[in-house]
Image (cartoon, rainbow, N blue to C red; front, side):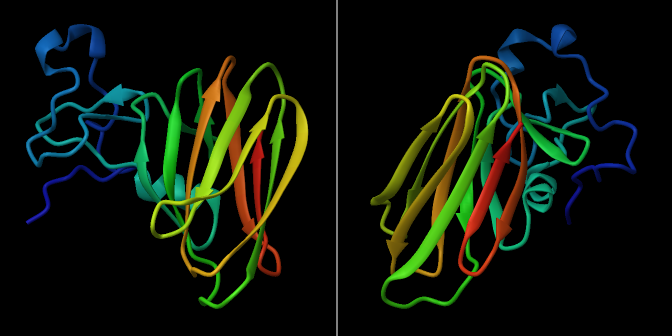
Length: 175
C-alpha cells in the first residue's frame, strides 16, 4: 500500500519546517526509502510527497523526471532551478532508428547559467550545452528512442518552462 501524501490534497505536504527538523534527519530517506525533501520543503509525517511526476508534467509530453535536487520547486506551472540545483530524466518522443535528429533550445533570462547534456541509453554524451543569456540551440543525432537529459543551474534562479516536441525536436525554455 502506498502511504505517500498526495500533492494538492494533503495539508501536510510542504508544511514542515526544515529549521525545526533534527539535523541528523536532513538528507536521510523517508519511511519508504525515498528522498526526504522535494519542492524545497519538508512534509509533516514519515513519508515525503514525490514531486517528480509534477515536474515532468510541467516540462511536457514524453518526459520522465528521475531525479531533482531538494531545492528544485514548481512555481506557476514551471520548474524553478536555483543556484546549484539539478534536474535529470529521460525524453522519449519517437521510435528508435538510425540517425534520429534531436534539437533543443534553451533560453535564459537573468544571471542564471544553464548547463546540460543529452545522453544515449548507454550514458554516452550526445551533446552538451551551456547558456548564460539569450537562446542557444543544440542539435544532435542519435539512434535511441530514449534520450537522457541533465540540467543544472549556476547563479540566480531560473524557470524551466517547457519541453516540447516539434517534428523530432525538443525545446527547453529557462526563464
